[in-house]
Image 1 (tube, rainbow, N blue to C red):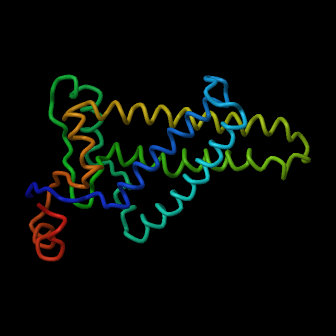
Image 2: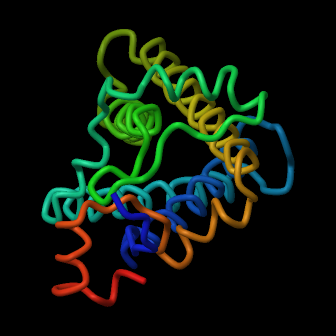
Length: 217
C-alpha cells in the first residue's frame, strides 16, 4: 500500500457538510429559544427561523441521499467489525497513552469502523426520528381532532426534543474528536480542501494517475 494525498471529499460533499452544520446550529439556537433557554428571539421569530431552517435541511438531505446512491458513496457508511475493537480500544485507552490511531483511510473506506457506525445511526435513526417528529408536530392542525391528540402531541414533542439533544451530544463529541490526535487544523482541512492522506493499492494508484490525475497529489 502507498500513502498518497487524494481528494476524497467532493465539492458537493464539502458543501453538504458545512451547510448541514450551519443549519443544525441554527436549529439548535432557535430551538433553545423556543424552550426559553435564551431570549434573543421572540417566540414567533424562533418558530419562523426554526421552521425555515428545518425545511432547508430536509431539502439538503434529499439531495444528499440522491448523491450518496447515484455516486455509490453510501458504501463509506457501511460499518464493519474488522478493526472495530482496535478503534474502540484506541479511543477508550490508547489515545490517552499517546498511541497512534490504528486506522488509516482507504480509497473506498474513508471512515473508520466506529465512525461509519456512528454516521449510519445518525442517518438512519436520529435524522429520520427528528424530521418525522418535527413534521408531525408542525402539521398538528391536520390531526388535532383525533382522540387524545393533546397527549400525543406532548409525546411527539418529547421525542423531537430528545432526538435534538442526542444530536447535540453527537456534535459535541464530533468537535471534541477534532481536538485529539493530529492538530485541529489537520482534522478540518480535508473537509475544506477535499484532500487527505489515503492508503492506496497499486491498482488504485495506477487508476487515479491515469484516469483522474486531478484527485491525486
